Length: 53
Image: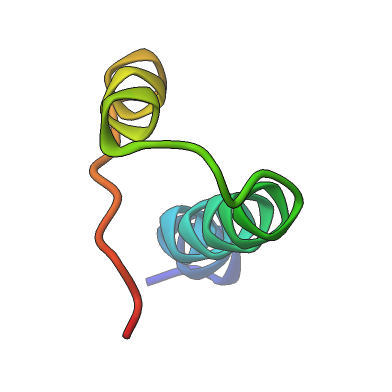
């Protein structure tokens, strides 16, 4: 596999990590958000959020 292909293969991990970080920031700023808002946002972004314990 070429270097470019390897870098491309890692993009989803980077994107997922960026989304996770963004969500954590938003959750900290908006602790009153209910599950319904996170479900709606997940549908828009085509991702599933899970609570971190």
